[in-house]
Image (cartoon, rainbow, N blue to C red; front, side, top):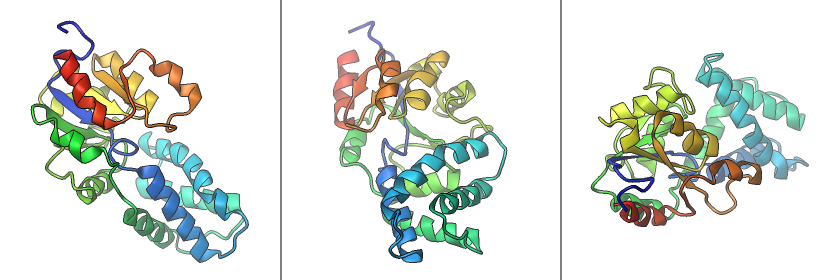
Length: 242
């Protein structure tokens, strides 16, 4: 296949949360345990994870746009959860968030397909491209046993303040691998940030559509890109393009 959509790939960037690390499972478990310990028997305990997930995107976007610090967005998000659940905001919000964060960390795990998939990509320059905070995302990569195996961990904090889906984020990440965007493949689960976003720079993408992970309204936008449901399929996809 000399002219396929994945020919000429020399480097691979992985998204982190939802692609390598099961972020949603860890966050859901962490916030549910946090609420249960502080407010035992709360009638909306079963809703806490969904509410917390809904607050994540807007407040992270505020931080990424430079409208607040990473710590401030954490405070705002926790206060937003408390308001939604009609419980008091903790006197020390930073300590309360740190309590949640500790519970979140205890549930950090890689998806089962990750280790073998990464091990099969020895001929490529690898990296992680993620919108989280540098310190936390590096800690996640260490926690799931990928430190030194997936190349640099690249975030907006290391890419001049440019986060996905900014074109400068993708071109900067490619440069960090010593490659041109068209030589790099981004693999991720977020249609806007990992799949359609890089196309404007010439970077190629593979949509990791873990079963049930992508809302139906986003799926049409990704139909023009290679799609896999497990990272176990990635090596065959690349071999087929060789």
